[in-house]
Length: 151
Image (cartoon, rainbow, N blue to C red; front, top):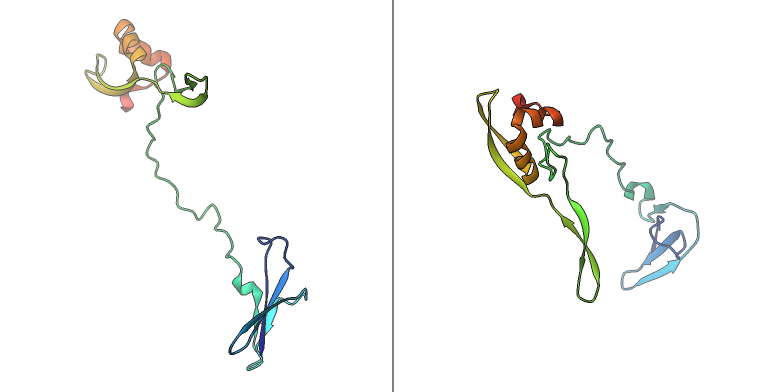
Protein backbone atom coordinates (compact mmCIF):
# COMPACT_ATOMS: atom_id res chain seq x y z
CA UNK A 1 0.00 0.00 0.00
CA UNK A 2 1.41 3.45 -1.03
CA UNK A 3 0.94 6.66 0.95
CA UNK A 4 0.80 10.08 -0.71
CA UNK A 5 1.14 13.21 1.43
CA UNK A 6 0.58 16.74 0.08
CA UNK A 7 0.49 20.13 1.75
CA UNK A 8 -2.71 22.16 1.52
CA UNK A 9 -2.45 25.94 1.45
CA UNK A 10 -4.44 28.57 3.33
CA UNK A 11 -7.48 28.11 1.07
CA UNK A 12 -9.01 25.39 3.23
CA UNK A 13 -9.68 26.41 6.80
CA UNK A 14 -10.69 24.14 9.62
CA UNK A 15 -8.59 21.24 8.32
CA UNK A 16 -5.10 20.14 9.34
CA UNK A 17 -2.20 21.51 7.30
CA UNK A 18 -1.29 18.14 5.74
CA UNK A 19 -3.52 15.38 4.40
CA UNK A 20 -2.41 11.81 3.84
CA UNK A 21 -4.14 9.57 1.32
CA UNK A 22 -3.68 5.79 1.34
CA UNK A 23 -4.41 3.87 -1.85
CA UNK A 24 -5.04 0.15 -2.15
CA UNK A 25 -5.81 -1.84 -5.30
CA UNK A 26 -9.52 -2.26 -4.51
CA UNK A 27 -10.38 0.55 -2.10
CA UNK A 28 -9.15 3.94 -1.02
CA UNK A 29 -8.68 4.89 2.61
CA UNK A 30 -8.33 8.52 3.66
CA UNK A 31 -6.58 9.35 6.90
CA UNK A 32 -5.62 12.77 8.23
CA UNK A 33 -2.20 13.27 9.71
CA UNK A 34 -0.47 16.33 11.09
CA UNK A 35 3.06 15.36 10.08
CA UNK A 36 5.14 18.17 8.59
CA UNK A 37 6.26 16.28 5.46
CA UNK A 38 5.85 18.20 2.20
CA UNK A 39 6.97 15.41 -0.11
CA UNK A 40 5.88 11.93 -1.12
CA UNK A 41 7.97 8.80 -1.33
CA UNK A 42 7.13 5.99 -3.69
CA UNK A 43 7.77 2.47 -2.37
CA UNK A 44 8.61 1.22 -5.85
CA UNK A 45 11.36 3.61 -6.97
CA UNK A 46 12.11 5.75 -3.92
CA UNK A 47 11.59 8.97 -5.90
CA UNK A 48 10.57 12.00 -3.87
CA UNK A 49 8.01 14.39 -5.38
CA UNK A 50 8.06 17.80 -3.72
CA UNK A 51 4.77 19.58 -3.04
CA UNK A 52 6.32 22.82 -4.29
CA UNK A 53 5.88 21.56 -7.87
CA UNK A 54 2.12 21.89 -7.48
CA UNK A 55 2.10 25.55 -6.40
CA UNK A 56 0.78 28.38 -8.55
CA UNK A 57 3.30 30.15 -10.81
CA UNK A 58 4.72 33.51 -9.77
CA UNK A 59 2.69 36.56 -10.87
CA UNK A 60 3.74 38.33 -14.06
CA UNK A 61 5.53 41.67 -13.47
CA UNK A 62 3.61 44.78 -14.47
CA UNK A 63 6.32 45.80 -16.95
CA UNK A 64 5.77 42.63 -19.01
CA UNK A 65 1.99 43.02 -19.35
CA UNK A 66 0.79 44.33 -22.73
CA UNK A 67 -0.08 48.02 -22.73
CA UNK A 68 -3.51 49.15 -23.87
CA UNK A 69 -3.70 51.08 -27.09
CA UNK A 70 -3.13 54.79 -26.85
CA UNK A 71 -6.41 55.59 -28.60
CA UNK A 72 -8.52 58.13 -26.70
CA UNK A 73 -11.61 56.81 -24.98
CA UNK A 74 -14.90 58.55 -25.74
CA UNK A 75 -16.11 59.77 -22.36
CA UNK A 76 -19.51 61.16 -21.53
CA UNK A 77 -18.13 64.57 -20.67
CA UNK A 78 -18.55 67.76 -22.68
CA UNK A 79 -15.07 69.19 -23.42
CA UNK A 80 -16.30 72.80 -23.59
CA UNK A 81 -18.55 73.04 -20.52
CA UNK A 82 -17.19 70.13 -18.44
CA UNK A 83 -20.68 68.74 -17.88
CA UNK A 84 -20.79 65.07 -16.87
CA UNK A 85 -23.28 62.52 -15.61
CA UNK A 86 -25.24 63.15 -12.42
CA UNK A 87 -26.01 60.51 -9.80
CA UNK A 88 -29.66 60.51 -8.87
CA UNK A 89 -32.28 58.38 -7.18
CA UNK A 90 -35.15 56.82 -9.04
CA UNK A 91 -37.99 57.10 -6.51
CA UNK A 92 -40.95 54.76 -6.85
CA UNK A 93 -44.50 55.28 -5.60
CA UNK A 94 -43.61 53.40 -2.41
CA UNK A 95 -40.65 55.80 -1.93
CA UNK A 96 -38.17 53.02 -2.72
CA UNK A 97 -34.96 54.63 -4.01
CA UNK A 98 -32.64 53.04 -6.55
CA UNK A 99 -29.50 54.66 -7.90
CA UNK A 100 -29.37 55.83 -11.50
CA UNK A 101 -27.19 58.03 -13.70
CA UNK A 102 -28.50 61.03 -15.57
CA UNK A 103 -26.25 61.40 -18.60
CA UNK A 104 -25.40 64.62 -20.41
CA UNK A 105 -27.19 65.27 -23.70
CA UNK A 106 -24.12 64.94 -25.93
CA UNK A 107 -24.45 65.42 -29.69
CA UNK A 108 -22.00 64.98 -32.54
CA UNK A 109 -22.06 68.33 -34.31
CA UNK A 110 -20.21 69.61 -37.36
CA UNK A 111 -19.52 73.30 -36.80
CA UNK A 112 -17.96 75.77 -39.23
CA UNK A 113 -14.67 77.11 -37.85
CA UNK A 114 -14.12 80.56 -39.36
CA UNK A 115 -10.43 80.91 -38.46
CA UNK A 116 -9.53 77.51 -39.92
CA UNK A 117 -11.87 77.85 -42.92
CA UNK A 118 -13.21 74.35 -42.44
CA UNK A 119 -15.75 72.27 -40.56
CA UNK A 120 -14.85 70.77 -37.19
CA UNK A 121 -16.70 67.69 -35.92
CA UNK A 122 -17.16 67.87 -32.13
CA UNK A 123 -19.09 65.98 -29.47
CA UNK A 124 -20.83 68.69 -27.48
CA UNK A 125 -23.56 69.09 -24.93
CA UNK A 126 -26.64 71.00 -26.05
CA UNK A 127 -25.72 73.78 -23.63
CA UNK A 128 -22.31 74.13 -25.33
CA UNK A 129 -23.99 74.29 -28.77
CA UNK A 130 -26.15 77.18 -27.57
CA UNK A 131 -23.10 78.93 -26.09
CA UNK A 132 -21.16 78.51 -29.36
CA UNK A 133 -24.07 79.95 -31.33
CA UNK A 134 -24.14 82.96 -29.02
CA UNK A 135 -20.41 83.70 -28.50
CA UNK A 136 -18.68 81.99 -31.43
CA UNK A 137 -16.53 78.85 -31.66
CA UNK A 138 -13.15 80.60 -31.20
CA UNK A 139 -14.17 82.42 -28.02
CA UNK A 140 -15.68 79.33 -26.38
CA UNK A 141 -12.72 77.11 -27.37
CA UNK A 142 -10.23 79.67 -26.05
CA UNK A 143 -12.08 79.93 -22.74
CA UNK A 144 -12.17 76.10 -22.40
CA UNK A 145 -8.51 75.81 -23.40
CA UNK A 146 -9.16 73.61 -26.44
CA UNK A 147 -6.94 73.72 -29.53
CA UNK A 148 -9.15 73.23 -32.60
CA UNK A 149 -6.18 72.68 -34.94
CA UNK A 150 -5.69 69.14 -33.56
CA UNK A 151 -9.18 67.98 -34.51
